[in-house]
Image (cartoon, rainbow over all chains, first blue to last red; front, top):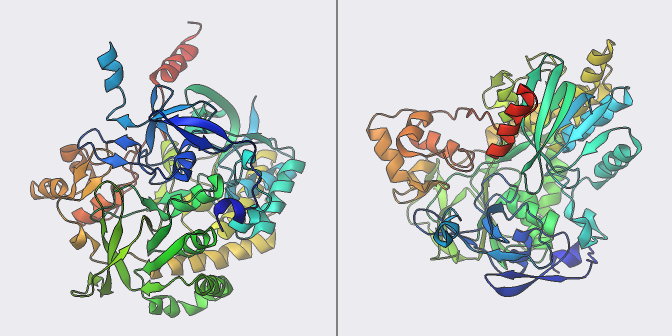
Length: 104
Length: 454
């Protein structure tokens, strides 16, 4: 049994997003965090201070540990933001703004 | 559009309140952050997942059907994906300020004559070495991801901590195909037995969970705790140990390999909006009278925000609050169902019993090594907090000023109880004028709209 079978799910057609450039399959309605979990990915941020990996902690938008960059916008809560076809999801380093600053 | 009553939060308390008030002839607007009503307890799988059997993830499904169908048949205006960051008092009543989700960049305002706060709660997790590793999630978080996204975090999980929430999380993960290596509960079952009479109503539910744990062959380790989570870049296992009078009994440590640890130490009420309105708090919860009124005229509160007690209590309180709000707005006398008033009395008693029975190990700070991160956002270690205490800090606020613990994204929601525990003082409610991050542009526009045309 898996969660989809347990809930008798018949999802709409799957679509593709990318995570750090590699394709990942997503189901309609799933949040970015759910898509990454389903692909076996549990971390997508490096902390500002120690550069430690983080992913979902509270799962309900309270803790901000799951911050991620989606389509170039950093600091999105992966547990709240729904994945959309073609989304480019990327591991967020630090504040997520360093890359932007370097590009200036 | 102006409304008579703005109900904030569409979980059990908010739904019951909105239905009761609407049925009594007042205009109700129900405001919630999620894409669908239900709150955390009745969180629904995303529509696109086409779940044909969502009830397999839930308890008391018939109650949800009644609420859902009642809402559909009612005149309640439902505003989903509205993240409320502040409720402002105005000469005409109140203005509910929200950000539209999921981006939370565009503002929305709901003017109302009265407000009813059904803001729910969130999980408390106390720190231990390794708790920041990916793979360590809150028990409620694992459940939320399962209910909403139909996903699980790994293949082999340990469910640990203390409190009644651990039971549905362990059985839920097991039903979804996760091997649950152990349910580690720090509370001595004898403590529950001592509250027998107050908990008698909870017995059938407890027996149901016990049967499900057996069916899924989940070993239960009572009077045990997780002392450490292992792994470099992600969780590979935990060390558990037996407890003796709230302390780890030396020599009882053993390792359990796992890729997931779902951990929780009880719940905390969301009181930011109540506090911002100036409502009196009782401990960490919003204080209410017999009609669920706060001490601010025109503001009601119900459910976990007024004290952690579970979904059934939230339904009763929501109903009573909705009846009172409708009556006070229409100048009539409140007429709550006698069954709801009785249920509230009984369920508050069992909630108090559960609250005193389930407690984290008394000496948990002893297990928190100096290099353990306490404030997850600002990466402040227990060593840094202890240094601040050595410098004379004696409360959470002074520790925060010296170390930044509690100053990050989550505004201390994840570390407040831990800092208080390390400082040896009781947890105090934090003041958060904004209940969530607000873009500066939204605040600036707010200013211009009050000043006149920009």
